[in-house]
Length: 279
Image (cartoon, rainbow, N blue to C red; front, side, top):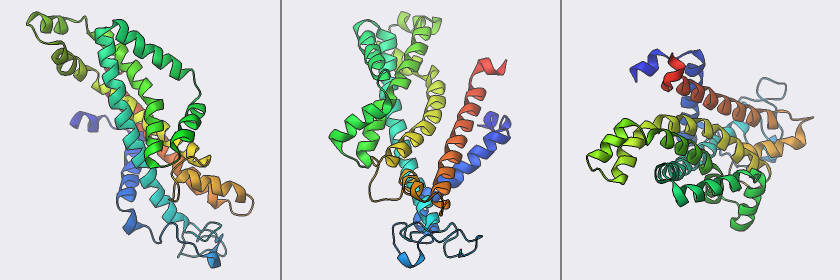
């Protein structure tokens, strides 16, 4: 931890600071949001942000076409986006990493089967696969997570398999075989710790992709229903770009800053954990 802090740069500090604020907003959203996010009040519909003529500090970022407070929706939307990203990345990372470990170590029919499944899935556009799955499962939080897990595990499987193939013939693995350790112990106690850094960096970068994918599905009406999400806010705001620009601008800015922060954090983690980048 001390080494990471010593090598922190301005961009890493910015990304970590923004993500900490975002996490705090998600955790404490019931106390931080000034209004109920879905409460409608047509008397104040399409109010501009507080610094524009007609705006009010009661609604600092304005209101939408149904009079709902934009700031409250953004705060609650962070909870949905981060929860979906967390569950999707953890589950897909776990499944993909285990399959990558086993297929890379044992090879043969298992490796061929996993890699052919990866190739087939990578040949299908994400939106097409998501539409097929969601047409069967229906929209909803759990179903969105399932779709994102199904479409993301392949990245971890490919990465881990490649690293395991490079590691399984190393001297420490041969020594483990020589003293009679089981294959399971060798894979999970000796090889897995040597690939965990790469998995963490990939998972960090995939968080940004998952947030974008969830927003895209919500924009298309396939995301979580009846709650404030950034994708839904963006979809609603596209109809009012000429006379209420803030409806699309603020959720778009939230998505942009979150994805940028996660990508900057992932790049920094890659730089400080990859020994080749330190030469």
